[in-house]
Amino acid sequence: MAPGSILIGTPNGSPVIPPRVTHGSARHDVDVRRLKTVDVGLIVAAMLAACTGDSSTPTSTSPPVTSPPPTIQPLAVTDLDSFVKGLELAGHEVEIDRHEDWANDIFGVRGYSVSFDGTRLMAFDYPSKSAATRLQESVSKDGYYIGSTVIDWGGQHLYRAGSLIVVYLGERAGSIRTLEDLLGSQFAPRS
Image 1: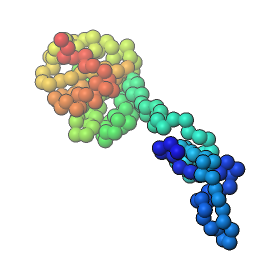
Image 2: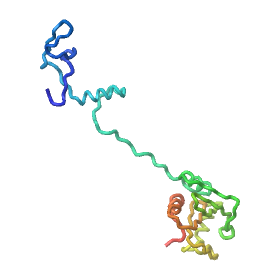
Image 3: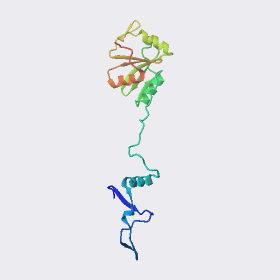
Image 4: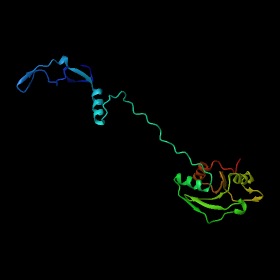
C-alpha cells in the first residue's frame, strides 16, 4: 500500500472486514491484497464537496482568483452643486451658506461660504464655463491680482472646474489634497 493511502473497500464494493474476524456467527476471510487503495486527498475533497453540495471533484487546490474591488470614479465637478456633492461622496461633512455674499465686486458673481471638516473656502458659481475661464485668465500668476485689483489674502489657492471658481485661504495639506482631487490643480498661484 502506498504512503498516504487508506483501505476503503473490496473490489466488489462490499465493506472492509479485517481478515479472520468473526462477524456475527460467521467467519469472513478477506484477501487484503484485493482491497482498493485511495489517495487521502481524494477522500478529503469528496468530503468537502459533500459539505458544500458540490459533487464535482476539485482539480486544483489553489485559492480562487478574485477580481479587485471596483473603484469609484470621481464625480466630475462642473458647478457649486456638483462640488458639494463630490465633497459629500468623499465622506466630508459639508456646510454651505448661500446667504453670505463674498467679493462679488471682484469676482463679478455672488460668492458662497463653503465649509468641509473645518476648512472654510469661498466658491463662485459662474453662469457658464467660458465666464469662469475669463475670470481665471484675469488672475495673475502669483494670485495677488484679479484684473487690476490687488488681492493680498496670503496663502491663497485658486481652483476652477467647469463654471466654478474656488478660493481656499490656508495651508492644510489634507484640504488641498481634497480640493485637487475634486477640482484639479490650482491655477493660482502657479510656477
